[in-house]
Length: 460
Image (tube, rainbow, N blue to C red; front, side, top):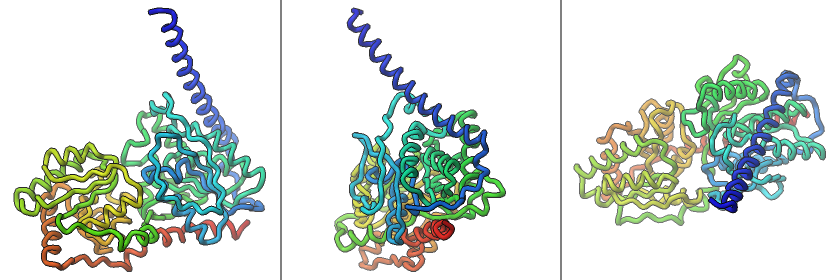
């Protein structure tokens, strides 16, 4: 090995080391800031002292438009949209996506009159890829976001902070600002923190679990209100609970936006030459794919005439699962891959039957956010969930389909046959309870958040 190649290897190693040291420095900075609060016990101070507010609410969200819906952007976008209709002045502190991210220009609903402050997205460096940081890999955004918010507060003030998670770093930033500046904070949990059903956020290792548990309790203590994207009666299964938490919990579901459907209805047409079954979104479990394969295999045996007319239309990031279904079953699969939010609704609208699936290890009360758009879509749902789940209850309440036990291949096949016969006989026996469905609109859910914010506006 010559000197030149040795030099370049050394140069690359030093660059890598510098990047890691930079991330470590950002991480240590965030931890020291939080420790400072902990030692001073600032969380016990009254954080509702009167301030002259220039803005009604400041949102903290690492992800927002134009990041794709997979990053949880729909919820924050819709909140901002409907609060703007209520006349609230708003600030959003977020990031600007780096090149290579999957973006969705169809979800741009951020009003022009709100102040949006964007910082560069954190680079995907070596330390972040190892997923060893607490609470998550986004903690290195702490210093940058804190500086932007403090700059805003030097020139004005806000009535209330709103931080949404995951990533859970958003909550830590918000709670730090809340304690330091005496601004009340509403913490929004789209998913549980320490009680999450999936390991997407890397809650692995005893030390990491212990630290995350302490951070969650800190956030719950500081928060004036804690929002969960679920029915509040399940809060004990959602949070590391304390007695004081009961009076803080508010359930605000994800819901659907009627405006998303108004742009599409009347435009989308079905293909009457085939029986189209739609499946939209990620698939988190190999078992879920097995259930789908078993159901289609039984249909192929019992009703080959119908099976050969079936087209499974998929939109989402799980193309490898679609290849497995196609190879094992022989059903025709149209795999669109990741599509925009608008196109995902179109895929559902032009189908004859929608499949909903989520892992069997999910708690019975857990409902993926896409179920709300599915009940609004005028197409029957076949949900591969247990009869006692909240998804099954929602489908019964809205009369939008049926729950099919994940191992019940017979019921899976029967559902497809029934829809085919409806269509063949020219009678489409799908009569949703629209009055029940309307309760789950984004506008109705947004009213609940407005009521919380109004409480702080009235006391400023």
